[in-house]
Length: 388
Image (cartoon, rainbow, N blue to C red; front, side, top):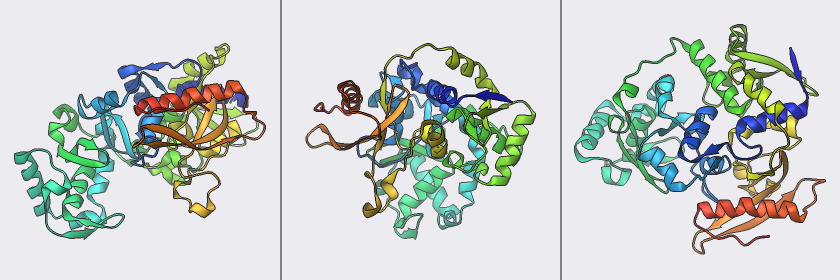
């Protein structure tokens, strides 16, 4: 079994993620290339200083802008927002691989509240009248939905979206307008058969997708497996065994880490390239809470000595830092965390909190680097930022 030092494993992870040295993802193609590598970019609607998917791309892709992202999603539709690692954004070419996920939504208990007659009515209305949101659809009644009771209109649209019969036509903030899937994606993609003949093949595909999305993973429970059968220990262990036996995964021993880590064999050349790199150019990035770099937070703690919890779901009196705190990655090290808040009325990005890790001195150089990252985040929103 090949052995790596902890520093080598950390360096590969950063290089693979596009977070080491000068950005290697640029512009429109850069967004698509990063999405292909990550498999999916996890989405969450919370927007305190930008949504997690936006911050994730902003930390990787030079020239990333909101209009570019919107066009990829709702203009050219080279990206689609649907379910993979929970809500996620992925390349439309991956749509056939996730057919089983959409079928599972169709069989969910609450799905039965949206009857076949209602589904047919909604699809016919959208076909005739064009894209609809819950208010414009106007169905009477309420149902018991996933988080709380909601209107039948919203439930019907969301259920048809979950099943893949509708897709998001456009968004304005969190307001979603839906359209028929056949008006959003090419028919050769919609009609493509599921490439995976059974559950084992689906699980193998997803495990390999997640390993490549992070760069290195171990066979342990973590959020990296959300949305897959690998969430459960048995199917996950079997998938690791099958993928290793057929030469798709390479087991690695990493200094100071008891568990075996796994690398996709397809990324072995990238590992060698990362180890051959010279000194990386200085760089500072803010890492989003649902960034693929953080999908396995215990792995990050093992490799980087940095513990991170997204405290948005933590009761306020139990929080250590704040509800939307971003780790600071600087020159290959996680050196602190920051809590930026966008004041939309004033057009300014404000700093609610800043915490440097123990032993990290807030030098002028580090402050300048952090100012640069915060200024890029502000500029993405068309806002200003007053340097520290």
